[in-house]
Image (cartoon, rainbow, N blue to C red):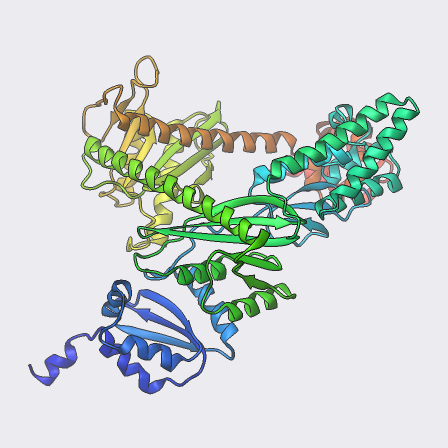
Length: 622
């Protein structure tokens, strides 16, 4: 082989890595390994970059996963940092952003809800998700919205705190239904003083901070006093409040005495799959648990998975003061420093061996093991159904990504489109999408036109975000709710966008519109049906029903928002007090829109300039 031929052959593997050693020193930092198309294969951190990279330069002694990664490596990138903690944080940010093939990857990274007590003079108690930017007190996290709703439901019974918005509170003139069913003390209309309401808020906050014994004791004493005074109605109300608090504690199940605040994190690995179970302990109470299934390789260690999970999980979340782990990690001091600096207070990481803390970890580990077993069984069943689907619809291989589309409207009003996604692991709810139908030229109720708009927008986004189809965003199969008309509309849109290799099938109910008599439509082919007892048919029905559920839910939310919308809210300068004055004077927002300028000026609190602005808002639109 000539020298020119040798230089033209792209180099890979440990020889490429070896060449980088001459340029590296012992600084901490982050390294990236890339293939011959510059796709990131792996992101890692190092206390000493030269020492870490020299390990990859060895031609042997690696696990199968690492050996494959080294073999595919064509180049590397390096970023030095001032400290090891910075390297750890940068590594986790890059992993979440780049999603490298050979890293352990946390796929479900949603935020967790909290309970918020607002900073209002008469505070509202409500669910809050996302950044803590609003003024108020926060309690959480809770594992799910359902857990928050259960606690809120009982807290409203126990402490009679309002859950209405501030604008609703300001505009009330009489108590709402919640007061009538003894779920709110009606501070909006003065049925309780500010001092008495503040006392109820303090009791609710104390309960959320774990001081439940004192509160229940005080309520029990008040109930006895009321009973002794023969105020039996008041005694019954106090009894109901005590019962509501007891129901919260009973639903929480695990309420550790010796652990005030902790995240209990347990990992179970089996056959190249992993489940991480997280329990949230706050104020000596269990506020729910959640399971996660990070992407792992066949030969990863528990320590590697646990460290990657902690780094990615707490990237946008606030850790507890104590993390109780089922398995230790290599850089526990480094991880503790990183989380402590982020939280602004000391975070401790421990792997308990005995006592109550160990029992908490054992319980979480049992849940992780059982959850993974169920998931593996479901995945096996799902795989069989996907193979049957490929055979029924003539696909080359079982689909890894199925997109199902449906529309929802009432006589064309509040029209929405919906897309759900399913794959080998079931429904991928984080990838569901909704489409507000924009087509002004569409005839109300034009299902074909709506489907065209939805598919056109979806294909345009795919062509923009994943033109090379290497990010896993393109579907292997599209299911369309509808018959020959919808299929023709989709075929037209596909042709307009030059997409010819994505199979799609229309799912239409039969003549009697009964489940089990579905007909399937494909472009240029006669409709066909599956046996009424075919598991694949049940699978398709489940997919279609999920799309229908999502579409209906989206439509109802849009309709409810439109019904509750008040045009006065969109006028700058019209706050709660002026809005209340306008509604009291005219009776409705519609009457305000029809009022002349002189009548608007006659409203108390509405200046001449504001009256002109309101009049212009309703009469100069369009």
